[in-house]
Length: 142
Image (tube, rainbow, N blue to C red):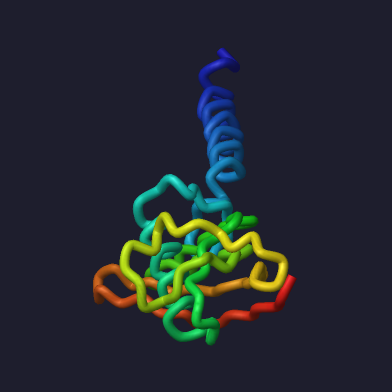
């Protein structure tokens, strides 16, 4: 006779445990939470491509085109849109920015012309407005 009386309490406890467990595994995907970004994801790659383009166009005053040597970290945060955070190590290529087809341009390995720079970027993308911009960046020579 006591079993039916405890059944709702037992079911409620089981439900609370299940919700708590799933919330802890999904907390990294909640709005406002910063979590690792997948560099193979199309939207992350689009934001990274934008970052590289803007770096060469407006940030780097070098006459030579630079390409990433390594993306050292990539994070994203869901806001009203998405904030991306990238740490990128750039290397100077042998191509000037005025040339075409720069994506495969080899890195410059001559000691006097070889240059590397480490940059951290904060990018904001609002897909529904088709808007992307650099909110903040900091670069230093390596």
